[in-house]
Image (cartoon, rainbow, N blue to C red; front, side, top):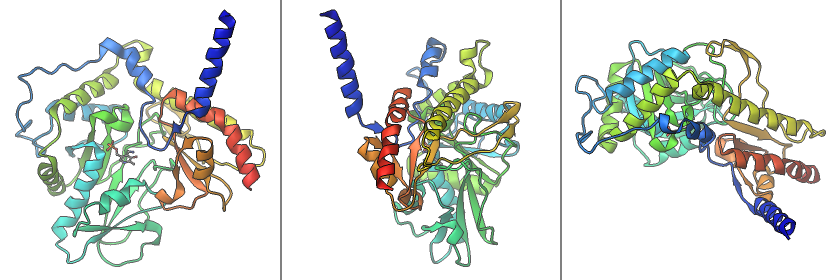
Length: 386
Ligand code: PMP
């Protein structure tokens, strides 16, 4: 009887697994949850009732609502990782880097005082939220104009450059390169768990976020490193009018988390970048192994060359946050994946065709494993649709 119960349990687990929808559409970064659970008691943020009542945090900084401790920890972390120049930069904190994208668009476009909205472009495949963010309130200041490779208008424009890119993981630079061009560098994924750190980024406007660095997307903390003080002040103005600053609790929590990953402790589990790198590397190995069984090459993911990573002090491959899958033209890949209850984001959202789909590599281990379990069936479906 006991073995019957066991068999029943196993069968129902399998049924549940078969029925379960695996959501790999959003890039919800829960993949490092196990790490933070192991850290446990060693990382908590206590905030007393008397703390942080004021709107203000730092009267001396141009970003008057930014907690000095967060600014300090951001600079320490960048210097340690070597992924961005922080000397002589203004740091602006935002409600996620999402708010900073809007703040930067405003800061670049508003002072131009143009009669028509400034064009905003990004090279395909571009991050699917850029068109939505740009056109949400149908601003008179800027307007989404789509693929940067096809942009031909004269005059001022803003190019959004994501490096490494969401969705395809490629390292990128601007592609329009014309006079009157302004560039916003979205470096959300320029961290050693995703890509080799080859040199410190040194651009005029660089955006980062704890969401993708440590996985604390729920805290909604992003930051911009800005060269030009006037631009930084305009971004601050945008956030002032939009949300009158950024939660002090979230900033203090983010500061504590960044402090821990910079200083760490001697035990291995506390070496965050080592851990997060190995999680991403393992998932990519599993995915590549599973795809290598697909003899008729119906499904591809990009390949990445080895580069020397100054942080890891070794030659490493990129293990991007998303797998940018491609199947033969004429097939709707998102639909095929959906048939096996794997939710992904189809190519159209990124300015590409339906033969592409983006799969998040950032979810929980169980979901990723379910995706791996369903991959053989997905390959069969592809073979029969080809
Ligand atoms: N930029 C890129 C390229 C992203 O992928 C994301 C999150 N998916 C963001 C910005 C926004 O992140 P957040 O607002 O959580 O900082």
